Length: 447
Image 1 (cartoon, one colour):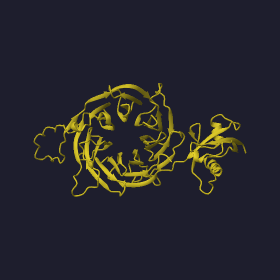
Image 2 (cartoon, helix red, strand yellow):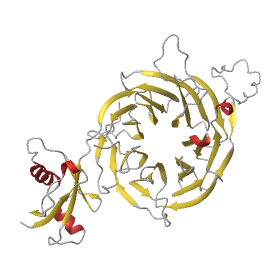
Image 3 (cartoon, helix red, strand yellow):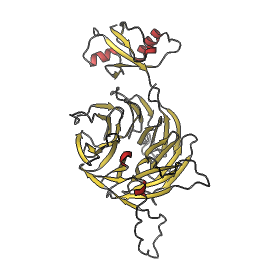
Image 4 (cartoon, helix red, strand yellow):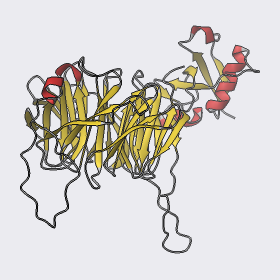
């Protein structure tokens, strides 16, 4: 059996082992390597789960396979940096909605907001599994595609969450939702206004708090800019009264809301704009669309300062201010990472093998430079590590069958329920999809 010389190092001084190189079988993988390190630490009775880095990449094969893949021989000495392995996320709560869940946002440590194809936005309590508040955005079935929680203003009641939702009706609806469980003395959800101007469905929202501006991405090929200042949201004018209805017409039960026009529009994509993210610190906006392009916008001038392209349509974007990387989901199973600071950013810095179908939502762990989550039409939610491009770190949610599926031929398997959205914040990962289930997990970012 071939052996290889390895030296173990760690950034955790209390877990350091002697620096001398030792020879071990080249067939050893992560589990066997962890056993060696735990033996050197004298922790055979209470072993630590460990991961191993070689040249900044997590080892996910045998040492022999690593040597072969990198054109090295067993005569080369390998330096293995070990660290305590991150545990998989653990379930916290699960909720059932009346229709597909297409957007999710984490409001606080015990509040999650969801929006769905039934046109309803809901606030959920993760501690007791109850619906805190819900609001039907429009009469009838109007699929919502995007949702976010706006930061509270000085004029806003502390017990209220201000939520922006948008979708197929081509408008953004601003709704004040109860942050506490509704009681007889608590006011119901109150729609504030509508932000109008698009001529196509809205797919994504992004907010820059320092500017008090909301950005919307639409199938009409534009990105529109709206003010979210309290005074501006309160200044909308109600639409003119409708003409007298015919006697046989069905009366509308949905009151008209004040309408706020856009401050302006941003053009550059050819075709639908389907993804947005922002960097508040630099006042930068990132957008992606069906033209396979990712654009970087300077929000001081609302102009494109950089254009990047790849092989597939862009379906999701998420920027990390910690790693300063932009992650993108596409009409293929790959999550791409872009370094927007690089001069030649037209090239993808890294590709993460994540799924078996399109990646429709991505979200970074807020305080980690390495971790992000992804949701896919293959029915799974996964945690990815940028240091492990070959495979995901954890499968958070496995694929499940479409509920109440009426099968075709005998023995035909039910299709999987597509996952449509994922969010990471406040130590939680939340995701929803075609099975109408909103699932929440407790997720560690570091040990």
